[in-house]
Length: 339
Image (cartoon, rainbow, N blue to C red):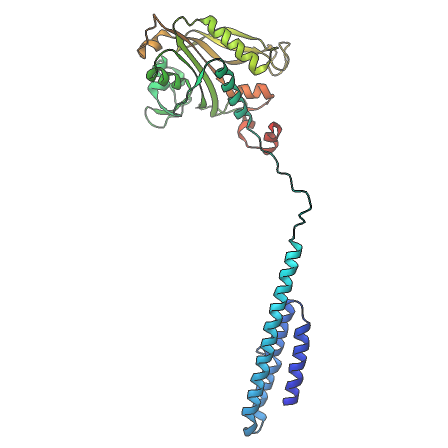
């Protein structure tokens, strides 16, 4: 039996040293030292030996088992090292190859328009003012001469957070806060987010607006017209004309709507302007004396103009975007066009 055991050890050594995969090595481990292994079969034969030979053979069997276990452990380390080297080779980097180009990000079209608007008005002497998105009814409605029964105050139009706390429906609130806290003259624009209960192809519950305010001695409607003319030319190009139509707003008197020549057909009439040749831009007018007086400003001495334009609307016209919802869907295919 000792000779048979020696042959088993020799055979095990040959097989273990030639194996190159962990799976096959585990199979050999099971074959030689597992529960149903060759060495276990020798253990079962010890009882058939003479009593005086059993201790010596048992000792020899343990030595054989330890030898095979050591062979398996050594081969396991070799296989791990071999696998590691293969992994290194497969993951190696050719430093001579050109690097991968990183795709450049781009500004959102609204951000681009926002910054361009600020640049245009700052070049005309305006400062940029900011205010909170969450407002009270006084700054959003009362101070702007909006009657208590005005439809804009209804829940169907305005998002209320509490009885008199709401998400601002316009950035005119910044104009009120500026007139409350700053000395005259005041010449500001107030770009920012606004919120109204509207949602379709041309309206969004959250939208962006820029409003302007200029209050000083001797400010006239002619100043408003000249400023708007400069802005339209700088934003849309020299070919774009604008017009002012009479309108009504609670916080301006007189009030007007601002239109520009259609940026697609240049006044000929098309689907964008619905055949009229004109596109609506926003509202404007001279600050109502009641608004000035509520804020402690002498309306006999000071006058001012104000206007409000939708930045989303400007972005749609400037970049010929057909649906406002595209601006808020975060579709990378759409946004890549502005890189």
